Image (tube, rainbow, N blue to C red; front, top):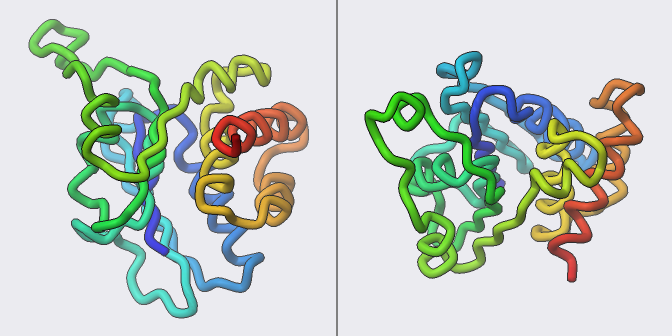
Length: 190
C-alpha cells in the first residue's frame, strides 16, 4: 500500500507517518517512510510517503502510485492529486490554510476544490477534521482525527492503530489523541 500524507508545516504530518509506520509494522508488514519537509517550518507544503507490504524496495511514491492520499488541507489535496493511482482514495480535511502568496495578496485561494474533488475523484471522502479535533480538546489533534478516519475508510484493524497511538503519542497527550482518533473513526463509519 502506498500512502501519501500531505499538508502544511505544523499540522502534525510527521507524527502521523510515525503512527502509521508503527501500526503497519505491528501488522507484520515491511514499512518504509520518507519525509520531505520543504518549507515546513514556514507553513509550506509538507509530504510524507508511507509504503507498506510484504516487500518494500523504495520509500518514495511516484506519480500515479498512491493508493491513498491523506490530505490535511484542501489545496494540498489538489496539489498532490497527480500522485493518486487509478482507483486510489483521497481523505481530505476541509481546512483551508492560506499559503504565502495568498497572505501577501499576490494570489487568491482557489475556490471549489472540495466540490471538484468530490465530483471527479471517486471514493474521495472529506471531513472537517479541525472541528473534530477542537471538539476532542485541541486543534493540534487534526492528525489523529484523520488517522481514525483513514482506519474506518480502509477498514483497517482499529485495535492495532489504537495500540500504535499509545506507543507514538507522549503520555500527557494520549487521552486527547484517543478521543480525536475515535471522533475521526466515527465521522466516516456511519
